[in-house]
Image 1 (cartoon, rainbow, N blue to C red):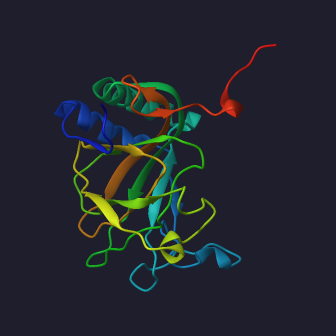
Image 2 (image 1 turned 90 degrees about the horizontal axis):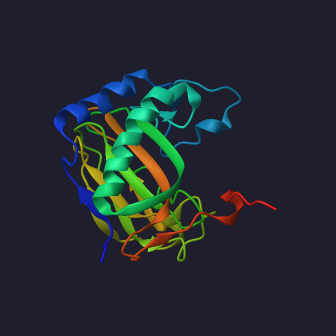
Amino acid sequence: MTSLPIILDDFIDDDFQDQIEDCMFKCHWVFHNDNSLGTKTLDSKYRQFLNPLEYDIAPAFNADLLNPLNKKSCEKVGLMIDAVCNKINFNIEKIKRCYACIGAFIPHKTKTNIIHVNAKVPHLVLLYYVNDSDGDTILYDKTIDDIPYEVQYPDEYCDLNITHKVTPKKGRVLVFDGKYYHAPSSPTKSMRCIITLDLFGNFLDNSYSFPLPETNKITYS
């Protein structure tokens, strides 16, 4: 029976890992002053570039890989997704969300970013680490059944215990049940690039199922 979380290392060869890293340079990126909501930078009328050494922020760049502007990168990443799902015997019904994220590093200043779940509905999270860096992914013991999705700061709602810390390593994949609260950490030694996806589908051994919500299904009358 499948047991989550799953960590895979070097399941694709070095050349393919390099190709995925290379295609990140061709993405359409959007800059965010703060990927952790540590400072309420949206309170001001105009957006400003702030110094992370002075403000409690974790700057990041995000790219929606499902955006047509990122079609070529998405096609390359799609091959990686297929390889992962074949390896773990997961049958995909739909990719709900697929983002790349680059976290800017701040020397000697790491922080845990916003603790969250990606969606209200059952889903499988797949994280692919594009490069070697620090900035662990942290998994907690609480789920959306324990803390409502709408809670902005789960650690202020109840006590959270860390169950896993996963260090970014080029070619590494982390797969876990999306109902569990989790958070990235900001890097201190190098840029941190990951690809994050939410998947609907089921494991072939029927150990876990993440059904496609009815609102996303096509019906014919």
